[in-house]
Length: 216
Image (spheres, rainbow, N blue to C red):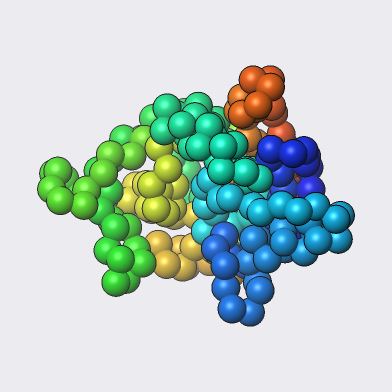
C-alpha cells in the first residue's frame, strides 16, 4: 500500500483494486493495511473511514486519524467539499464529449446493485456527475473511451450505473452489463480538500496502474 501523505490528523493512501474499503476477516482490506502501517511506524493511531471505493476499484483515499478530524472531514463531505475525480474506460462513446449526468438512483441492498429509476420514492436518491471524454481507441473490435469524471454526489456504484444506463458500461464491469474485460476500469486519480486542522488546500493525484489504461 502506497502512502501519499501522513500527519497527526489524516492519512492519504492508494487503495489497490480487489481490496475492500471495510474490515474483512481475512485482512484483505484497506483498514487492516493501515493498522499494519501505523504499527510499523510506531503510531498510536486509528483510521476513520470517510468515503469508500468499490472492491474492484482502486485509487486515492483519505482517512481521518481522530474523532475530531473525522467530524471536520465529514462536514466537508456533507457540504460537497471533498473534490473527487476519477478516470474510467467505458465501452463505446458517450453521445457528447462532455456533459453532466443527473439521475435518480435506487439501491437494491439484497442484490447489492443500484438502478436508475424515473421517480422519487423511499430509498431513491439524486445523483450527479460531470464527465469529459479524453480519448477514444479501438480494442478487439470494441470502441473504448477514456473518460474523466468529477463526482458531485457519492451514491453506491454511482459512476458504474450512470454510464451503464446510457449503454456505455465501464470496461470489465460485468455486474453492470460489460461483455469484455475482467476488472473494473475505474480509478480514483485525484482528491482535493481543505486540511481539517490547518485549513490548507490539499491536492493528491495518482495515475492508474498498467492495464487497459495503457491504450490511452
